[in-house]
Image (tube, rainbow, N blue to C red):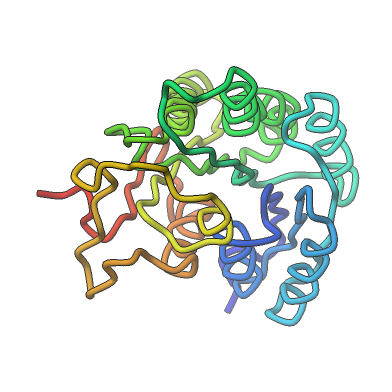
Length: 255
């Protein structure tokens, strides 16, 4: 029986850890050929090795800097050249800064928006001709912060709201070409990215992010809890799904 990603080539950015890693390994287990793209190339190679063990026919790695426009474009060109095609692009590279808005620097704002949003402009624009040829699809990582905002994460929330708007706009524009665009909004997820950010000084506990409610996971989901959503939207099972913003937050934003 053919697996969902047999004969498909999937490029995943930010795949060396966290949600990107979990999505890569899930897709590998379903027969996808992977291109792991990340700033941390050593960890990316580890994920590629794991992907091969999980059943990926091929797993290559590319180093790139999401904050650099030329690096984004060159990364896509290199990815397409490996197999001569691209069936799915998963935009997951991201950066997180938190703190009081009045203490945020212009440099911090620019970095977060550049990595989380502007990089998608460069990457998608470069990848789109290949995706049109394959009638492929794009899945981007947004956040519940981009839907309802979040205290102390102003730049992050703004950038993720931009990802949502970008996804919906491109879904409408490229529907006639058969290219699907969707985004996933995780809630609180336990990743190295979040764990590595210092706590906010003098944070008001009454306005911090709400916990998840599902299955007692009040501390947040594991990356593997989110991976299935990526696999669904990236696959042919979602062939009539485009412009969808899929919230995967364990009822964090419900009620």
